[in-house]
Length: 144
Image 1: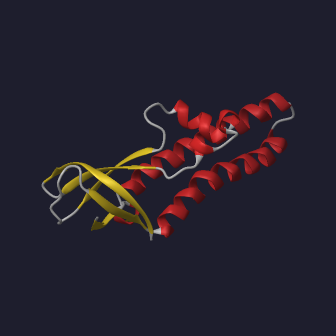
Image 2: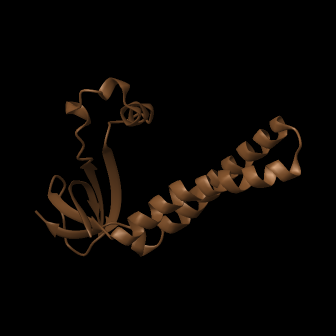
């Protein structure tokens, strides 16, 4: 179980909204200005490393309380596998198929790009479905 502390920002009838900060050393890193991770996190807008989750609980909570939430390692590993490996395999497979279908390299590149973009869309739709499953939702472990 992967655990993280979070702060309750809303609680209504058994549903709590919590906010947690990523525990990252980006602020103290010497190469922060040239780092891809730092640059990408700035593009997302909002505050860097801030995550908001909604979780169901029978424990009554108050706004401002610190709680510990957890997520099963299995669900995190599966999500990472889906996000990284599926598009990578798509690129490799479509490169092989595109080489045999098209003689012109520009057509091969367009085919590979289209199929890879489609794989990202499929992964996003599947991830939305997975978010509804209880195994992929964080749970309240305890009130700190």
